[in-house]
Amino acid sequence: MMKKQYLFSLSAALILLLSGCEDFLTHDHPVSVTDELWWNTESDATNALDRVYVGIPDGASGRQLMFLSALSDELVARQSTRGDYESYVLGLQDPTWNKSEHIWIDDFKTIRRAGRFLENIDGVYMDESLKTRYKYEARALRAYYHMELFMLFGAIPIIREAVAPNNSYLAKDTEEDVYKFIVEELEECAGALPLEYTNAEIKRITAGTCLALISRLALFHNDYELAQKAAKEIIDLGIYELYKSGDDGKSYEELFRYTGELNKERIFFRPDGSSGVWNTFAPQGVGGKTILSPTAAIVNAYETKQGKTIWELGPDSLALYMANPDYNNNRDPRLTASVLLPGQTFMNHPLTPFSTSQGYRDKIGGQNSTATGYWVNKYVDPRDRNGTRNLDFMIIRYAEILLNYVEALVETGQWQHPDVVKYLNEIRKRAGMPDVDISTYNSENKMRELVRRERQVELAFEAVRYYDIRRWGIFEEVMNGPVYGAVNPANNQAVLVEERVARNDRDYYWPIPLGEILSNPNMKQNPNY
Image 1 (cartoon, rainbow, N blue to C red):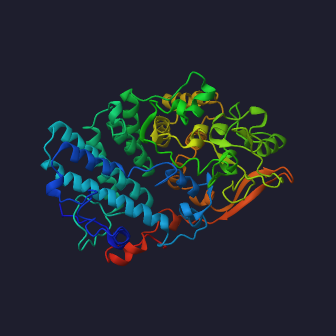
Image 2 (image 1 turned 180 degrees about the vertical axis):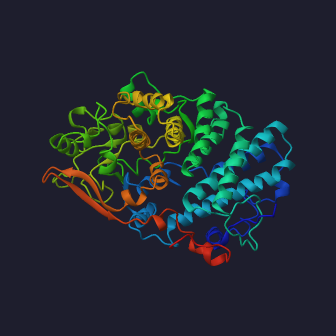
């Protein structure tokens, strides 16, 4: 195998200049001691592995995974201080786009940490079985960071060794080679890592995490047979289950609150990963900031409690639900668990985005206020107002795996397989919704329609929809044209929020950062940038 050198380029050099640490590339330890002095004890190895775990993203801070929903038809982003997401949906992103540079640098930096760990761990004096487990954890994490880059940028260089960046002129490997590398690494790690850990190590990568990553990646790559296989293996493990509190109408909401935080549904999560939620989603009137706001598109996707979409209703009923989305308390309970609506009261604060009262802080379009008239409710626990602690953020949970499995069955011609309705009903029942109406969803196309809608409402704002609309080939369809918010009661018209522009032949993948292109003659830019 040809020796790979590490990709870091001009973009990473900027970090060096800002940090003032010339030996950052050869010393990752905080006090910059040499490798010979550092890699000695189990504590050293644990600390080094923890630095590889640091790259796992949060929900609404740091890498802020939930912001990816603002690159889909679920959310609208405002305030470029948290990243210029608005440029992307307006079709204005280019190789200087700050989000692509951020992810590119961060992932490759953490990949290098994993590589350095793997190259030095054998010299550490520690229990050999633990050393072996640590190696598989580092490899699984390295595969995950490659996977994130692959799903955003497409073809990338595969980094197998943590070689210093001197003369690091790497070209991209093919998409198929990158996909194969990630899958093979995760499959091997899944066969070697534990199924579960004790509470003290509960954050660590498990066999189930590796299988879940394979299932998500395979689905993105339209490898439905592998997606189905990996998802079924997780189901058959028998250690994960949908969180249920005893009240099906409240279980889904509690899953994203402290009440349901410790659950058997989470497969891959970031401990305390919701630290930025209050200053990202919460209304100003309760001391928060609203940077991300739900769109009418996601609000209108939820069925009524009778299992009907609002588009199946007559024009009068449709108008009622569009003006008052939870009219007569008759919508899928996942709507109000995920979205705060006009007319609701949150923490004794009335939500009236079209208020004309002087001094009201949550008017639509105001600074740090909702852009659409709606607010995200998922992960916004009132106890976080005081900032005393933070909810864990679930990157992959069991409900997604069930949906992956069901979709893979449908896409391999098995839409009538009994597991399709079985697992859809389990998800719907937990949410307080009726079973699938098999007289309506009686063909492959109708079942596909239902599965896609279930993914949309069950996984809303969880950084899944952006990948879904791209792999389904509907990116241009849902990301071009006007974005609407809530209906203004003064004129019964949905507020026009923005006009979006999307090109599948360019926007499917992100631009390679300009610094990488300028410093690496072998790096080719993605198409049409």
